[in-house]
Length: 433
Image 1 (spheres, rainbow, N blue to C red):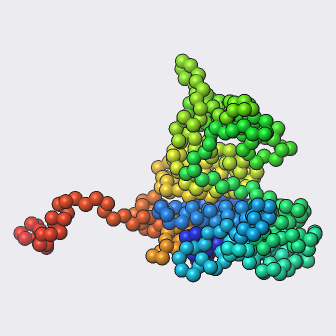
Image 2 (cartoon, helix red, strand yellow):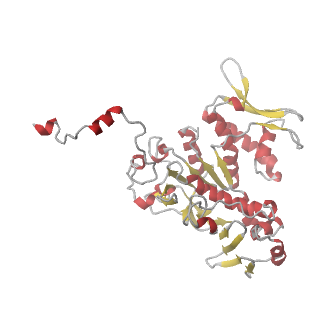
Image 3 (cartoon, rainbow, N blue to C red):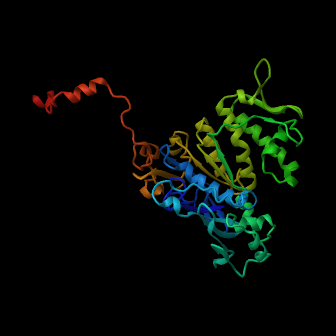
């Protein structure tokens, strides 16, 4: 489980910022809290803020870190440098970017991070805490790699094939390093979903067997290990169909139609009192398509206990569906493997109690805003010490916690200009009496 994440010099995040999933000291602090390796952690965080305040850049930083671990050794071009995006103003663009994370895996706490400029990874480190005592597994500084006595395996051989723009962790896992591979797999399991990006629901047949039904379509898009697919695929299909019925889209079934030489189309079956009808998914509403885009990643995360990142959860998604997803991650029966969810949203209904009991704890709400220089600041709602009975939705919309847009009057009434031109009458009728 993710414990905390910090980053600096990534897009609008100029100065070091940190996000923590360790619960705060709030009333009812035992509710919706999970235990991992003796550490209490939250199962989800909601991130609020004005448009262009840097919410997406926070999740994007996590996604960049994941991609660097998973892809740098195999897919970064040898002379291609690092595809980072530093803060654009001032001198920061020439300085390294920082990414660091702490997480619990199989009872061990890990702290892993790296720094990178445009050309290379300048630093990299991994520490493990199998007990309360810290173990240094490796530390990299430029071309120098220091190996700890607790890291076993063909470390020096892997060091020789680690390029300047490749992470040592990435190179080790690609070469089947037994001790480091579990850490690599934790990163590889992170799912990143942007609901603002339209999904494709028709696709060209390739060399792989064409999907003849929903099961094959799902298999092509999920991360279920091959050895587990037969057993777990039926469960996923059942969960997905149940989700569609709960969403009340009138959808009864899903198929993928096509042949080896044509484009395949995802088709959905609608039930009605008179007839059943099959329609292509691309003709469904945007909200329906969003559920299809979201469900595979969400159900995969719940099944594997991994981390799910969703940018713009409220994009064309009904508030009750967002609430259902939150409840699912909170429910230990539906989330027995301690999957976690980080999402950005503008849906203030999730801050209040109009949907029933407050969906979010106060320490599950984080906020982003930019300063006058365009740099993003990330901070928790608990910095404001809101009272237990405080209406968080109203307080947020009133600007009590910041992280809202500054709105000037967009269209001014002509009468306003006339009023400005006229001499001010400081004494109104009531004052004159």
